[in-house]
Length: 513
Image (cartoon, rainbow, N blue to C red; front, side, top):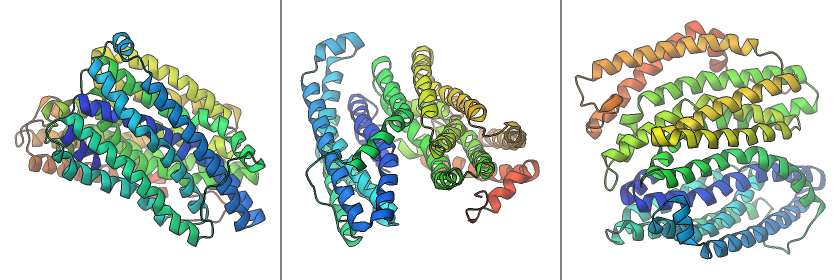
């Protein structure tokens, strides 16, 4: 809803590109320093102090670490803003062959959004503290606050700014900054109730902070590759594509991230503490079995989701985003970007699971090295494919890079860390591929039946269909595809299907299911 409201307000032009590119930078820092590497480094130390020294001591440690982090982030934000103000716009525009107006607007939007970086990374550490203490509801509602405020601004305040989409972009930025303050205040009462109330203290270096810093370095490099790739993709789109390229990539990636978050991120998050306990107890065989099960479960759910998303890309993008300033051309290019991203979903899920295996074993260097190679591969493919294929080429580069990344990581992990042979996984994959092929055939047959009924654009994008017609196409194809896959998977990959149906908690003595 948030993205739909934004693209309808700003469209796929200058303002949309500038805003979504500017949003990419603080959002990448949030994912990396907030919810990613920093949280992964901070939470174990907080949990250790909580377990060994009590809640009061853990509260004091959290205050020092979060206050020091906040001071560093404020310094970083101020430095970046100053550098942006000193940016030689004409030189940048000349080197990148961009209009001066686009460079200037992106710089102004980014300078205003950078303070969000500092606030949201601190908020993410609040979330980590509360997760460790078993409180999930309050942190889970924090992003909802951002979305609600953003949507209200786009729907109500945005149109009041007039017809100039640039001014409308400033309204959205004001809403984001206001929402960050609301999100910060939202966590404070519950943290106080939990006995870990936050107040700023003097930043200083402590043994606990050193322990977090030692963990942080390899995690930053291992988990930062994905964010580097996103920034690289959108930078190349900004420089090489016409106005709207960044918007189209953004929308395609957002829709790709839905099944990725629903399946792969949830699965890797759930399996990580189980694997961590198994390796600590030297239960290597159980960890190997659990890893294979997690990989099989990821593929069982993400592969058909990827193929299905590839099939309904056009109707889905049109249904969600067309309207206002966002027209048919934007729908077509965003749908092609989504099709380019879709088949990368299973590979990205494999990477997430295998990275968690490495972290559980205490080896962050392996994923760090492979991730560094993946950045180089991605940028090379971006530059090779953006010219002939545009948005679809940049999205396909992400998918191809994810495939290379997943294969290399699996081979190295299997060979160096004794995760075991690939044969059981490959045997399971044959049945899954056959079931997915059955689903694809059914979807293709359904699409042929729908063509005479609905107006269809090039490559089945249904560009001329109405909103109701698109909804009907999606409903029919999703229902047919899900039913076909369920029946085929039950017959062709019985063990994986049985594993899915019997998911339940088990004690720590056996493999997690």
